[in-house]
Image (cartoon, rainbow over all chains, first blue to last red; front, side, top):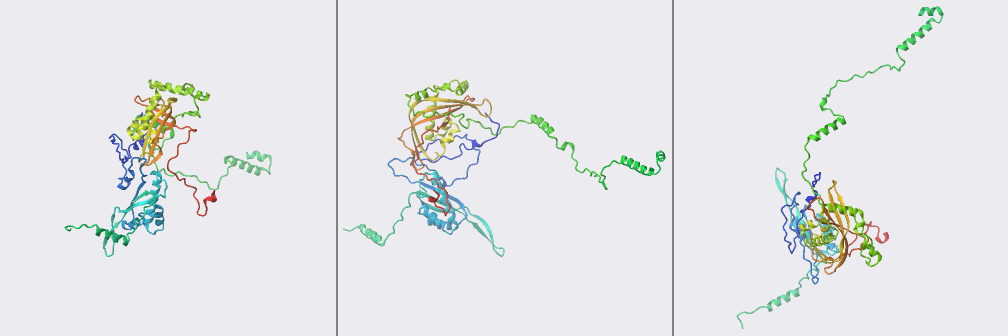
Length: 208
Length: 303
């Protein structure tokens, strides 16, 4: 029964969202008769899609799989080389320690990374079934190059240079659990032991 | 005139003459407040001329013209029609009696509950008659089994994420309630057995938008045993258990678009009574944020 109004809101939401990637594929294809009334969202990057994988239920004997949360921020107005220093600073810390370090860091990127970490923490607790928000550590933290735009920078005497307006992306992967212990440094004694072991494990050829 | 007056008296003649003259003058000019200088406004030349056909009409004329135009204009074409396949809510929800399924059927109260038949409520009877007009095969004795089948099929297709089938078994109002939050979760549901035979408890009919656009809603009482286990994105158990059967008493509402000859009975919603026991808690601990404090305040002081 056609109603005397022009409304299309409910049609839009019907089949607009993507299918989660499952390890055991359901294998049902969408019919082509769906009505796509809205424009599709911007193309999702690989890092955002990593939040969509679904693992099959664990058997009772298996150790509990730690939760992994991927988050990123695109096109930050900052240099990727400068952002790298902050990303390297945070790698391997627990989330509380990372937030503390970033709060008292003077760089511009520190404030942005702090926002990203807080967003990721919030997402983890709300959507990804993480129980304790402090029980997260930073497994990976990367800075990547964003889109550069070129502009003219005027010098004296009618000369000009081409200026690049630089943008970067920042990616972070939070994993549930305490941060892993740093590997113990190799002492001189260990190195010597290895050397002796190498010497002993040589095989002599063409000899008695 | 002057002569006769002159004959009467000699000394008062001039005075009377003056008086009479004053009276004559006052007759001719009536005694108004006449200003010393009188300004008579003169109309300026009419410069803006609006022809009659462009002038604004009075309200009644406007309405008359609109009326005549409505008949001549073509009717609005609906560019995007929409089709209401279900109502937005449960109409006149059934109020389950307290202590349902908690009292044994051997005691007096239990017997009373059992004897409460559908025939007692008049509104349900009327609605039932309307439903039978549109769907002659409907009967309160065969429908509960069909309803239970639909219920089981719907939950199975929810567990398997078979969206097309789920849409055909469940109305558009119920679908988001069932599916919300489950996109990245694994659900394992199984139906163990039915503890009591399901029965129809409540029937209602409504028309939406126009008269005669009928939707029928039937509430079925089901007492069943089911197992439910929900796993999150990483395969960890979030709720329930696969080998933990639970007894479930539910009042499920099924709806059908009666006027549509190809309409089917679909699950529309559930009625949760107030006296229902609380659900099991979820496995993880949830933090409830406390009150926001100033830096000077402390939480113990506030308590």
